[in-house]
Length: 592
Image (cartoon, rainbow, N blue to C red):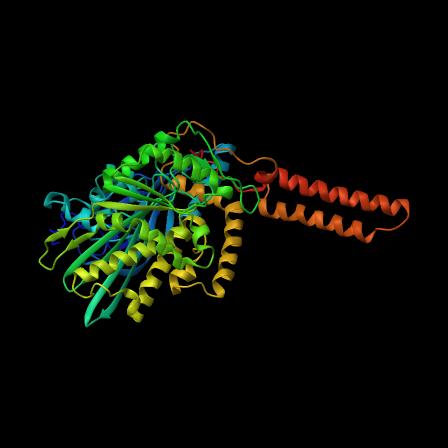
């Protein structure tokens, strides 16, 4: 797994100078990089040889930064996003890996063009989205290695590919900032092009039978249909699905390297679940005529990238989820073959809400296919002994909670087989027999599940206590209840804004190509949605209380009671029948 030296070295530390006329990025890593200048008047980007002379006696403000994430051009001017804080989270193939702990947009529009009232209103909304982007969770990067490629894919790179800039090596599906890097790519500013992916990166180390065992868990979120829990569901017409995440578990011990890759993604049919203030909005499969083609496109893409596919469908086969189970299962009937197996498994019917140990019955069904797909394995001499020949694709409704419990089981099974092959385990050994290792492995997968869940739903994963402790705890259901309520609030009153922020920075909404005006809310939605809903609900309670207190025998009191009750019923009817109007909806892009 030896790597050739990189031809292009990324700037890993810089000083940002805020001159009156321009922002200047000065590399501090000792390399002979040219300085990068961005005009504060029109956003023009160019390289310069030396720092400009400051005007007058005023010394320009400086800020230490750790990378340029990208550039956006909006109505009023240009905005540059930079990493202002980073946290070391481990190493990947010998190179340090960092998580962005803070980011900031710098505005380059000191002489912005005149905007009409409509454009000013639009720009105000865009800048609000930029503030949301600055707090994006789970962004990771490295200056020395491409983090978007699995160990198996990286091993296949030849010397000419390894010496390319990291952004050229990367899998574009997983580059969170690919769109924002566009202008820097056009100007061939490779030393400043920092590839960033969203997902999760955790690493544990434990001493096992006097050998140091390292297990790394890397999850890479696909940007093709990125979004929030309720505003990005299912597949689009090209077969790309919401919440698609590739997860790689890497084992390093005694010179051996092993890797196991699995994926998750929303049910690959076209469906929606639009928020409307109800606790569980109705799920609806749409465009059923296109469903077989969409499903086929999705699995064709997976097969080309990973080999054989084991599709594990964990959703309920009855109740509100049944409509999706039927649509998905029907489409799969004509697609299954020796390289594609569809396994419906009603997780809740089998495991309920507490007996997740029964999930082993699913593993018993797929054990042979799981073994045939294998894993990537390299011996201490650097020889590739085995390659992974397929992938398990797991989904539930959100691809968060049930999915994470299932994926952690598959990760554990693969790890045990790999440790046997490396000579640390016998045929009957398991991770569970080693208390410290078992505890850290559970924590690894639980933290991973929380990270992926926060990015999609806004909260930690449900059922996390089982992944973290191996059983349901007393506090677990209470925590699940709190997270469920938090998801309800975020999904109904916050995620529309968050969805627009994602669409803006990933290029799903391109201001240069957009021929439509930004739609501003009208009616109920033009007010703050949550306060308005609370006011009307409170008014209904007040009317009810007054009507009950005024209940009596004379005609006037009876009339007041009826009037109060009628007003209460009317308020509740308005809130219920127009629930969607109170919700925070995205404004930039269509759902499909």
